[in-house]
Amino acid sequence: MTSLVWLRDDLRLADNPALRAAVDRDEPVTVLYVLDEESPGIRPLGGAAKWWLHHSLAELGQRLADRGGSLVLRRGPAADVVPAVADEISADAVAWNRRYGGAERDIDTTLKTRLRDEGREVTSYAANLLFEPWTVRTGSDTPYAVFTPFWKACQAQPSPRAPLPEPRTIDGRDARSDDLDDWELLPTAPDWAGGMREAWEPGERAARARLRAFLNDDLGDYDRARDEPAAGATSLLSPRLRWGELSPHTVWHETVDAAGTGAHAASAHRFLSELGWREFAWHTLFHFPDLATRNWRSAFDAFPWPRLDRGHLRAWQMGETGVPLVDAGMRELWTTGYMHNRVRMVVASYLTKNLAIDWRRGEEWFWDTLVDADGASNPFNWQWVAGSGADASPYFRIFNPERQAEKFDPQGLYIGQWAPDSAEREPLVDLAETRRRALDAYEHVKRAR
Image 1 (cartoon, one colour):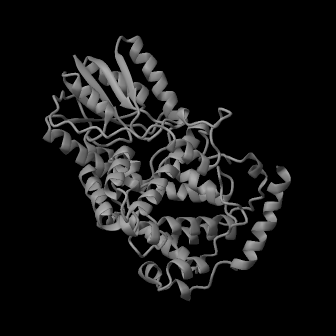
Image 2 (cartoon, one colour):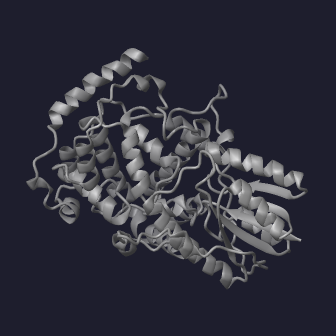
Image 3 (cartoon, one colour):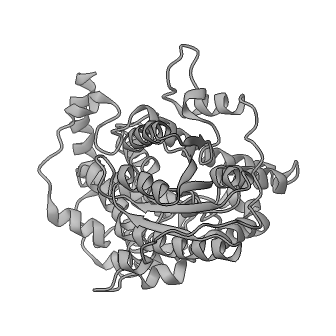
């Protein structure tokens, strides 16, 4: 008798309900990761995501081996691979932690039916969100469209469960595995990941260390300095949550414990609301699976995007717009696979409103270059800035990158680090003129309501 645990975006041993349940069955366990870029509706990973995935899987494999287990790697459509592995190891039980995208849910539902028809016990677990999407509804039994009441409703729920301990030993059962290097997830020609190697150490060990460092050293300044890109006050936990090296339950409880009722309570409250924003994005995707391709607000379908100016798009991608804060953010992204959240809003506003380029082009670029791009937060936040999404920033709120720099980078430290030459470039467009054009274009959306 053997249990098969299928891992997805939950590359951790601690607080992993599917793994914990399998280990507690007191029978051999096979841990499987499937690189599925072939199933219908599954979005292939971007380059930065593949880099992170390679290193996170390598570390996870070592951690499993240290406890007596092993990580089996297979590539192909999950609907074919998972039953095949279950047959090979004669699994009587299969477990996984739930996913919330539309295509992913369809695959999991089909697999659950097939595996049960084969006589196997199949169980899915809540692991990667604090609250399941179908449990948070308005009084009229509809999904929330505005964050503040959504988060109040979440906080009225029972507190998130305590995190589960990681297994100390695993009675592992091997199966044929691909070689991770054969997946060619790392860039080689050219190797553009040098900046990411300097900035990040993927894996669960480093994730736990980063959480401790943030809570010990940075939480107190979070509420005051979180919007200053040079302040170093952000948690840098977003890729850890995206890949599931940390669970939101772990982050929640350790933050609450660290803050208590003392001086850090206000910062902790603000930080936990960012976990709430992540929840809101995933709940929105659950109810609107086409979030990366369709306007959440259908009235925005009437927006008259002009013909794509590929030269402007390329200048934005490479940080060559002549707008220092925008260029600094885009170069930070290109170098490290990351960008400060305040700057993300600025560069997204500049692309969609000053350059009049469809938000989908920006979302696609972030998908390819961010180490923390996930199927919910990435399109959700792009639609928020563009004005087409849930609880969106009003379209007339156009971030002025010069004023944003004066307010949040007054000494020019962030710009000086990433784009010291930007001010010498001639700006692509006039900010005031393009702002007026954007507001004029928005009249089409207002008439379509």
